[in-house]
Length: 107
Image (cartoon, rainbow, N blue to C red):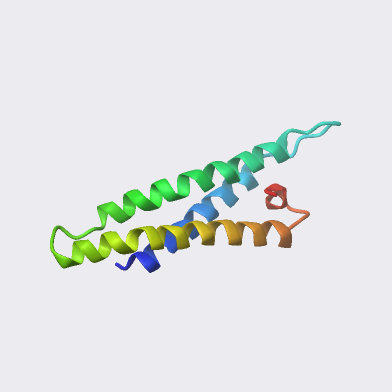
């Protein structure tokens, strides 16, 4: 599968996992609740894990040898950049669109 398609899909999947985990963090009461900080940590942790996961999947999907492997390895950094951009931009858009939800605490 093409890295330009696969790695952004992985970025979207990682974003959905971060959103699910953020929604599972319970609201805390009191004057200084720590739950918004926990949700930010989840978002940024998965932001760091996203390229690691995508790169390892991209390497695992690479052909064995020849020109196909060369083309695959050249498209890997570009696909990785697109995947990271998809994660960040969609995460930012989700955070701003859902300001009153748990996901709204990401930024």
